[in-house]
Amino acid sequence: MIVVFDIGNVLVRWNPRYLYRKVFDDEERMERFLSTALGMDFVSHTDVAEDFAAAVAARAKSFPEFAKEIRMFHERWIETLGEPIEENVALLRRLRASGKPVYALSNFAHETFALAERKHDFLSEFDDRVISGHVGLVKPDAGIYEILFKRAGRQPSELLFIDDSPPNVRASESLGMPAIHFTSGVNLEKELVARGALP
Image (cartoon, one colour):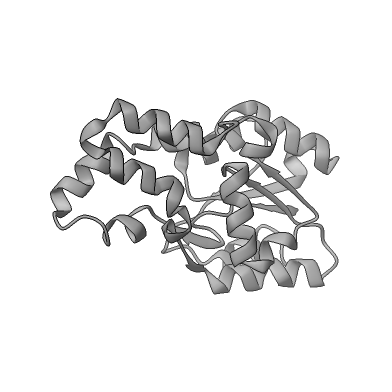
């Protein structure tokens, strides 16, 4: 099995609260902001937007109450990115050291991925990376998985996908690519060994 990693919350922690807990004094108001003005539907839109800054600026006009905070999603996006999940980065490097190709399939705007890559050098260590902002499709759209299969030159059944999002895991499995739903309670090393992906 050839491993395909999602990046956010599989290899590096990501949460807009890392930024917005510094910005909001009122937790309830912050959560209202994150469920409306900066809901995940909008975040997914920015992951394929041709112009990340323009998408954020347009959103700010639609939510004048939170315009300043929305603009921070562009101005201070790097503060939404946390630390590496070191044990999983170590698994990525073990896989590469064993001679196996390793791929990434992840949702990032092209601009934010460039920021993440500058902060975390291991993001350059994949054999290939299918990033939503580079290809114009976002998980769980089947099309982005098809791009991965074509680039990897593999049948879906030869690949093993790791993602923290249940809809992305379901999309992967529906296309014939086995998947692991990664959460904080999952021992990823044990899972990879059990599935024959890690020697």
